Each structure stands twice: as C-alpha cells, then as structure tokens.
Image 1: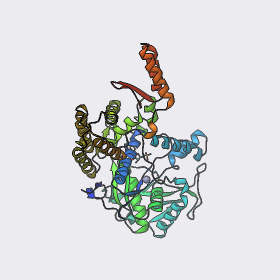
Image 2: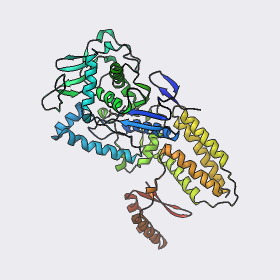
Image 3: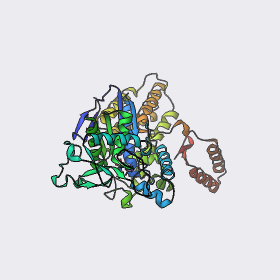
Image 4: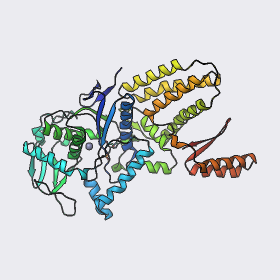
Amino acid sequence: MGLKLYNTLTAKKEKFIPCKKGHVCMYTCGPTVYDYAHIGNFRAYIFEDLLRRYLKYKGYSVLHVMNVTDIDDKTINGASEAGVSLNEYTQKYIEAFFEDLDALKIERAEHYPRATEHIKEMIDLIQVLLDKGIAYESDGAIYYKIEKFSAYGKLSKKDIDKNIIGARVDHDEYERDDARDFVLWKKHKDGEPSWEAPFGKGRPGWHIECSAMSMKYLGETFDIHTGGEDNIFPHHENEIAQSEGATGKQFVKYWLHCKFLLVNNEKMAKSKGNFYTLRGLLDKDYSPMAIRYLLLSHNYRQPLNFTLEGIEQAQASINRIRDFIQRVKECRLSDIGYGCCSVPIRDARKAFEDALNDDLNIAQAIVPILGLISFVNREIEAQTISQVDKEELLSFFDAIDSVLGILPDTDDTVPTEIQTLADERQKARKKKDFAKADEIREKIDSLGWVIEDTPQGARIKKK
Ligand code: AMP
Ligand code: ZN
C-alpha cells in the first residue's frame, strides 16, 4: 500500500505522488524568533519530523526548507524594548530554537532561510504582482487585491464576503471572517528596519516571505507544505494567492496541517499565557525524549490535550521500549540456528507501515511494535532467542527508530565520569553505606543520567 496523506486543499486523503519520482520537496512554516518556542510549536515541528523521517524511511530523498521569521511586528517590538538591534535580539532565539530541535531529536531541514536575508526575492515577487495588477499601492504600502485571485479561499474553504472586498488589513495575523486585501509591503516607520524598493522604502509583511523563500529553494510548484492548523487562514491562503497569482501555476500539491496542542481544551499559545517551553519542562526534570514521544505518538490530525501526567506516561512507554532493546542485547541466546522472530517481525513491519501509510497513523503503528515486544519478552524468558533473532530484532528496531527517533544514540554511551560515579555507588552499596549510595545516585541524576538496579546489575541510562 502506498502512502496516503490528508490534503487540506482537497479535504481528502490522497495517494501521495511527488512531482519528481523518488524525490520530495517540502516546506514548513518555521518559528518567529521573538521568544522561546513553546511545546505547542513543537507539536507542529515534531509532526513534520515524523513526515520527513517516514518519507526517508520509504526511500524518498527529501529536500526540506523551514523559514525563520526574523522580522515582523513582534521581533521589532522585542528588539526595541530590549534596546538591542533586531539581529542581536533574534540571534539569541534562533540559537535557542536549534538547541531545542536537537534536544527533541528533530532532524535538521536542508535549509533554514531567514526572512531578512531574502528581502530582494520578496521585492521581486511583489513587483511581479504589481506589474500584473494583482497588487496596488496605497499610502506608501503595497496590498494584495484578493478580488483579482478568483480562487482565493480555496484552502480555507472561505467564501469571500463581497462587503469586505476592497477593505484592507495591515496586521499580519487576523481572523477568518476578516478576509481582506492584505499587506505585502509596509511603509517605512521611524525606528523600524527598512529596505529600499522600487515601490518605496519599507519592510515586508509576514506572508510574502514564505512564498518568496519556498519558491526560491523548491521551485514554483512543489510537493508538500505543512504547518499548524492556525496557518491555514490567513497565512497559507495568502501564500497561495501570492505564488499562484504571480506564476499562474499550482503552488503546492499537498497541504498538511496538524491540530493544536491544547491545555485544558484551549490552544496552547503565548498570548493566552498557558504555555510550557521545552527548557521550562527540562528544568522540572522531564526528559526531552518523553516530551518527543508524547507529541509524536498522537495522530497529528487529532487535537492533543497536554498534561504533565501525559509526559510521565510517555516516559514509561519509552522506558519499556528502551529496556526491551537492552534485554535483547543482553539475553542468553539459544543455539538453535533458525529464528522464531522472523515471521512476527515481518508482520509487525507490515502493520507499522500500513498504519503510517494511512496518513501517518502513528498511534496505530505503535500497536504492532508493542505486540512484538510482548512476544519477544516471552521468548526471552523461554530462552528461545537465537543469534539470528537477535540480529533481526536489532536491525528492525533500528529501522523503525529512524522514524520514531526515541532510542539512545551511540553518543549515549556512558561517559567515564558517570561510570566512575556508578562504580563508587556500587562499592558504597556493598559496604551497606546506603546514604552515600543515594547521594551518588542523585549526583548521577543531576548530570542527566539514571541508574537502575536490575538482576543483571546496575544499568546506566540517559534521562
Ligand atoms: P508561530 O511561531 O506562532 O508562527 O508558530 C510556529 C508554528 O507552530 C506554526 O506552524 C503554528 O501553526 C504552530 N503552532 C502554534 N501554536 C500551536 C499549538 N498550540 N499546537 C500546534 N501547533 C502550534
Ligand atoms: Zn509561512
């Protein structure tokens, strides 16, 4: 069964057929770097990571671009309040963003273009729209005339209200009922960064950057565009209007949007103050992998209510899988040459792929993996696992982890400092000096590792 994806544009699950066989071009709306991203944002980035990883698992080569919005009302206000240049202000949050991506094991995209480094491309695109009569000038700003693009509303399924045609909006973000001519280029204001353009000094609106940068790196028509559900209107609707208005070609074939991460059934958002940052949660000693698993393991088209208990359950699930891998590595092997696991592995692989092929049904994809773990645990007890089984199991879990990204990397090998502490703790325990042993355990914990006592001895794992 081939991959099917739910396309917001057609409101249907569709067979995925890329423009170029074996190759996928995809674009993701990235962060506005005026503050730390919250984990609602990371729900979107983790769903995109799952998509990217699964496409690669299926053998596609992926060219993925994520923009960084380093100029807009929020970044400009932030820099001016902090009394630093825009660049200095955004740099701090750009670095924090990449640190968070790494902590959550989100694979890097191929390009992270910054808005401020693509002003020329935006000016050129606006000029095309002006030349075609789709954009117009008013009071020194340039607006997109939505009346000129008859397909306006096709993504968000919005009928443009005739009454507001001709009305304008200067803000980058607005509600669905407020479809209006939107701003492409804002007139220069004192104290704001600005650039010279043939149509006047100023700075870009938010929407134009994604059209200009996606087409620069991926071409005028590309395969997949993703974002959170709040991006559908106006942002993505406006991207379609800008790009298709300028080129006359289809902009994107498949539009994918994840539902919100909620807190008490409300969208997690900066403006609501109900948000958690990744670093805030790590400070409370939650592990990044548990947060990854929580955000990853729920289907992207279902809203997900965030709770701290949810992270704890996710941690328990990860531990179960990680412990299992460890057990397979350490188990006593039977000397029977054939594998009792071959058929169960084959079935689990098929069920895993069938579920993910069905619009990334990850919740369903995990079920056969847990089933396989239960089966193999029984076989380990019965000492019927052979060398062949062991190799097949480890290679199967490697393959599925290229999609899930939850197993320890090789750089999770225990550093000498931690090993030495663990040895000291072991000595203390032998001497029945449990106070000292506990103290060392806490030290190990504070360095990001956990120590577990098992019948085979102490086991050290990254948190
Ligand atoms: P922003 O920095 O607000 O432009 O958001 C960056 C990305 O995070 C966009 O794709 C948003 O759609 C997405 N996003 C923001 N809040 C949430 C949320 N609570 N749940 C899921 N995605 C979100
Ligand atoms: Zn965008």
